[in-house]
Each structure stands twice: as C-alpha cells, then as structure tokens.
Image 1 (cartoon, helix red, strand yellow):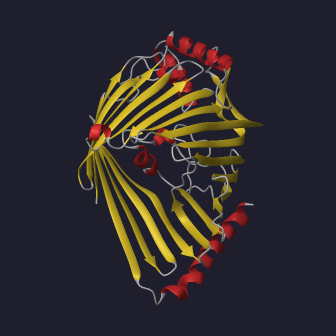
Image 2 (tube, helix red, strand yellow; image 1 turned 90 degrees about the vertical axis):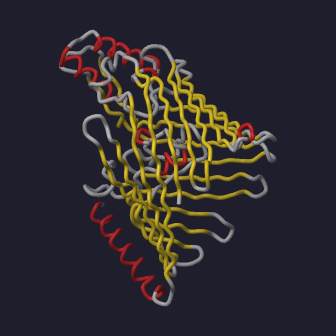
Image 3 (cartoon, one colour; image 1 turned 180 degrees about the horizontal axis):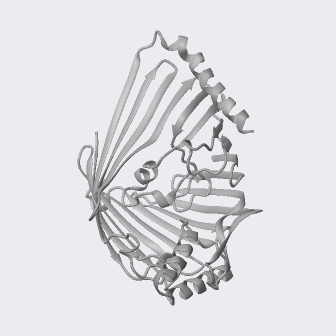
Length: 421
C-alpha cells in the first residue's frame, strides 16, 4: 500500500507540471505578498497544584514577551498558482532565547478547468462551523495555538498538512474534495499513519441548509457531518460532529504506583461520537451571541476521573524523583485540549463597543461534568490603518484537581500589537 501511495504522489505531481507547462508560457505573472507582525507581553498569575507543585521547575514562566512575523505570498501565472506562508517566532526568555522559523504553507495549485482544481504541498486546513470545540476540524492542534491573539490568527498560525489533492466544483455549486496526506519521516511528522480525506459540500436553496459530509482514514478513521441553517436575518443554527474509531485518550489501568502508573492506549476499535450543537443570534445593535453544547464520547467518565484524581493525590504524597516521575506520567497522559465529556460554551462579540471602534469578545467554556471552566475577555482597537492594539485576559476556575484547575496558569493578562501591510 505504501508503494502505491508513493507512486500516486509522484504521478500526481508529474501530471500537474505536465498539464500546465504549455499553458503558462504566454501568461503574465501575478504576485502578491502580505506581512503581519505581532508583538506581545504576557503575565501569568500561577498557583501551585497537586500536578504542578513547582511551576518554575516545569518550565512555566510568570512573565513572557515575544514577537511573531508572518509573511504570506502568492505567485500566479495562467492556471498555476504558488502560495506560501512562513512564520518567525521569537521568545527572549529569562535564560536562553528561543527563535523558530516555520513554513506553515507552501503549495502549488493548478486550475485544470473552471470546475477542477489540483494542489500539492503543505496547506493549512480548517473545517467546521463552531467556535468552542470543532469536532470536524480534525487536523487542528489547539494545544499549539497562541491564544492571546484573535481566534482567526491563532488558528492560522499553525503548521499545515503535507498533501496532494483535488477540488471539483459542480455547475450547481456543490464541491467534492479529496486529498492524500502521507506519513513519512520528513512529511507530516505528527502522523502515525497515512491519511485520506474525502468530503462533499452542498447547499439546499429551498431550505437554506448548508451541509458538508466527510470521511477520513488514518490513525482514527471515521465520518463527519457539518451544517448550518439561517432562520431569518438574526438566528443561525449549526452543528459539527464526527464518529471515529479508536479513543484519543489513554485510560489509567491502576492508580497504585509500583513501577509506574499504567495508561492503556485507546486503540480498541470502538466508535466514539464527538458532537457540537450551536446557535447564534445577532441583535440590532450588532452584538452577536453564540451558545454551544459539546459532547465528547472519548472523554473521561466520572469513574475514570475518580481514578485519575486518586493517582494525582498519590503522586502529591510522594517526594523526590519518584514524585516527579509519577506526576510526569499523569501529565503526559492528560495532554489534551479537553478531558471530560460535556461542555457548554458562550461567546459574545461586538465590533464597535460603546461607539469607540473597539472590537470586543467575551468567551466562557464551562465543563458540565465537574463545574470547572475558563473565561476570556478580549478588547482590540485599530489605531491606524493596518495597525491595532489589544488586551486579552483569561481565568480558570473550579475545584482542586478539576479539569481546568490541574495546571498552575490560573490567570493571565496579555497586551499585544498587530501590524499588517
């Protein structure tokens, strides 16, 4: 199978180049480039927890400053378009600075006709309708997002997927998408298996329903469904859901520390449902409100969480290297964007708060299983064309060892400047 996939990629790339070689000769080049600079300072209010009794030893900072520079460029000629985005991130740090250059995107797109497009290379992919949890956005890595920036920038500043694919647009506006993303040592390093993705999007004009169905194969194969419908000018209903085989999270096998805690992989071929149901309402004054409910079938049940809580309490009673090892095993197993099963999410946003040209956003993510959660407030103002300043504050709440109080970064405050040209 791997040999066939390698052949398919090679053949696809060769076909792209052979198809457009003659067509681009007589065309003129089109070039566009955009730059975005973000500079920020962030301060944390940290507290000791049973899982992190010493935040500094875990590498957590109380104060942080840094910069991000993103350059996006497009070069086109005839039916061929080359697109790329590189990102430079700099974090001075207290002892040793960290500088990284990432190629988020670098791909070629070929227009074979008005209805058929092909592409290959590294490309950012985003799917779904929801704001809080987006089950169908299967290639997103929310733990890597720099959440101090607005959500669109935080989501876009991510390394894309290395793939080869096609988009086919029908005459009535439907879209078929198919791509193959291989798992190689130097491609898609986070993958454990080759990935295939297939989707179909359509719009029912009579009912106003927009629907995308998808199927995907890889480490956790499954199917997805995403859709929305507008009810008048003010109300929208939407949903994102997947059914995937194998569990994303590892299960604690026993909470007695002998040679180490044992966490079992979720690769047992069971099917897990992940669903978000949402609604949005826009008031006459421009205030938009979204309310969502999310069910994550692969999240920990109450009995499973009781075992995890017992293991954390046991680790907190230890000392020295034994305690560090025990806490490290638990923390590694719990490195997920969400851990439980039921959540409520609220978002309120207004573009011109108090007629001050001030963009505002308030978010509340509440875990219904343990009554813990996270609140966030963002205010951003454009000071001149292409330049804005903003402030972002967040706070985690809940009981000790609840989901959102496991880690010490309880509160944070960030100031940032964004410049686009």
